[in-house]
Amino acid sequence: MSPKKRARKSDPAPSAAAGEPRPKAPLPPDANTGVVFTLPTEIWLEILSYLPSVRIPTLRISSSPVLPASTLARQQGLRALSQTCRQFRTLFLPQLWDRFEVCATKRQQETPLHHSNDVQGMEGVFVSGAWYKSIAEALETRSNGLRNSPEHAKLVHKVSVALTRCQSGTVLPAFVRCLMALPNLDTLQVLRAHTQMTTHLKDAFEGHVIRQVRTVVLPDHAHNVLRSCPEVRSVVCNCGDGGKLVSAIQKECKKVEKLAGFGPDEKMMKRLVKAVPNLQEIHLSSLRMELKTIGMLGSLKHLRVIELDIPASSTPENTKCIGLAKELLRKARDRGVQKTCLRLRHLSASGSGSRVEELEITGP
Image 1 (cartoon, rainbow, N blue to C red):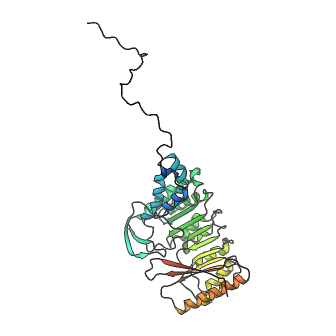
Image 2 (cartoon, rainbow, N blue to C red):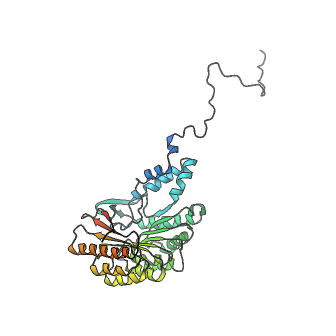
């Protein structure tokens, strides 16, 4: 039998059988994108706003040292979206890196405290285990990584962190170096700092100037952080009466225009009106609310907004304070101060939230 001939490599491939469909041409890049890729950015941001996230400001974290892990939902969603495709990366990566947050971990051991809420209605949690080690390691690792990534560092506008004494000798310096490397940072929020780490914070922040920050949220005992932000305009005290923050403002922060979360007594109010002569807005907490302290606000020539915390069990003294605040704002309006307003934050008896009533000062 004669040997079979081998087909030459140059021979054309056999044609497809009759009736067999030909391979489809590649789809154009936008053929299967659908409506999801045509949604306006505003719609996406509205959808993402329903995911739990870190609030700014967070005025108090109940009895928990860190926030619930559920507050990571928004950042996790943004990270997933930014890794979906090139178009989503362009849209969502700036939103993801707009915030740098180290105040909870995904695997922290927590138990909900159903009867413990912050003043904004966020449910508290009891965190067990070595949470402080996880937070410290995450803060140091992420701070070093962000400092060495200028393309991401320039996207960061807001920083929210919980600070611990764990490995503070290496963690805090790394965090400060990171803050210095964020050219567009405007808001710095310290949700929690141990009451006995005042010296740790002083050693880490002393000699460093973070000029780009305009809003600072922090506990009273973290005043050494505030001293490094001379250009700050808004200061929120999320723990304590704010007395140490007033001292820091008087020495280092001459441009403050807004204070919130402060609970001054008569002596502290005297220092406050001298320390912040350009004050335009003030929110006084329910720690102390007396006619004498509110009356001292009359010496502030630029004050246009007063916000008062009103307890659920309001007293005649509270009513008098509200009346005096209205009178001060009317006088300010008569001096030519624009957009005067009195805000009343009605606190619930259960501590599960508040309702804000805004009163525009328009008549006598």
